[in-house]
Amino acid sequence: MCHQHSGESQCPSPPGTLRAQSESDIPFPWDAGVFDAHCHPTDTMASIASIPDMKARALTVMSTRSQDQDLVSDVATQHGFEDIDISISPCSSGKGGIVPCFGWHPWFSYQLYDDTSSDLTFDGTPSGKISHYDRILTPPPSSKDASFSEGLPDPRPLSEFLNETRSRLENHPLALVGEVGLDKAFRLPQSSNSAHEAQRDEGLTPGGREGRLLSPFRVHMSHQATVLQAQLRLAGEMGRAASVHGVQSHGVLHDTISKLWKGYEKAVQTRREQKRVASGAEDFSSSSEDEDEDYPKSNKRKAKNASLGPLKHEPKPYPPRICLHSFSGPVDVVKQYIHPSVPAKVFFSFSIVINWGTGGGDKAEEVIRAIPDDRILAESDLHTAGDQMDQYLEDICRNICHIKGWNLREGVEQLGKNWREFILG
Image 1 (tube, rainbow, N blue to C red):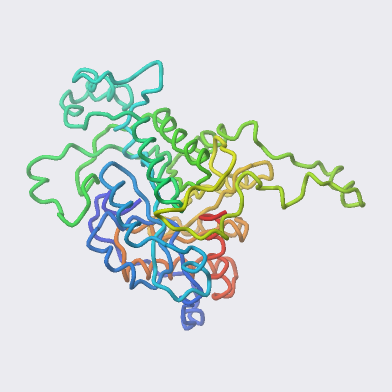
Image 2: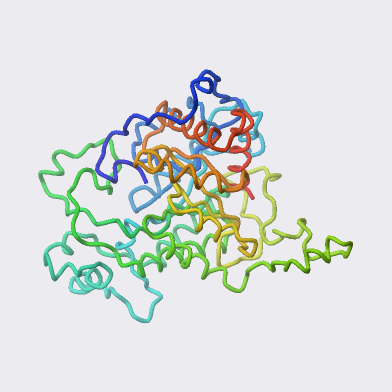
């Protein structure tokens, strides 16, 4: 998630990368195509004008809350790709653009209530608002500060947001669902006051933390899971990929996602069956041509944002492709997601600001080595577009290539291929 939400209005300088001195002398192959799998430039709208002049070929731009859904849509209309085959092909020399993503981040999940539940947390009254926040926040605000909930927005129906998101996805045929997820560590910021409003940076899109002190209140994981699953079901319904956030919740996140594909798991051959097939018996059920027939290849379509409808597919209750962004989990969790029985294709993206900026570089290296070459992505996770975003992308690409032992150009090309597979299938 972008820095402005963690209380920093400026991005830190990129930490040193892992490459050896000899690698540092190798010019970076921007012409091979560099693709940011996760970023938030609409948090700093003044930076949007720099997107066409960036070295990066494409930015996957997240929305997170009420204040940025329309911003991302508007920027996609202005800077989105009209012809996906030409614009993001490896040999493209065109200007950079964006792929929009629409979702409700777990940090803001408290602002929604599940209006499809038989046990409603909000009835539309002032007292119902207090009751809603007492039920989905821990500890209940009324037990600590009776005025805290009064300063929060009136919760809105989850179904209303899902309908709006469905409409945005229909209007942007290449769009994904994101940023969505779970976060066990997050605490709500204190309510804004007049002193804070007088000092806030007018260049930042409203709704973030922006330096406010944190309260003791967290969102119950069960409520976060309800909001997450509803959005992932929508992604599955429309055959769109999803970008997923997970902090201190890797086990519960896997459980929450895997519940959606229960009953849809792929059959896994036993060793005896594998030997039988290898000895000459035909096994038509394992044909790779049929593996993803419900989520067909889309990289041959010409996408006009204003006119092209969504692909025909069989709706499923889970997304066809998932990216776990700035992934901080252990190798064991990676193995769960790439198990042959998993029906969704799961990718793992990494950023300098999260995976190295918080001192987790050694852990990230171990995990990157364990991830299959075709499941890894690069991201900036920055809240401002331009030269700094390009620099972070170069650094993370160099890091990944160094850890993987890839030739720099071939590695960048592999990362671009992976990004196209994540976006288009």
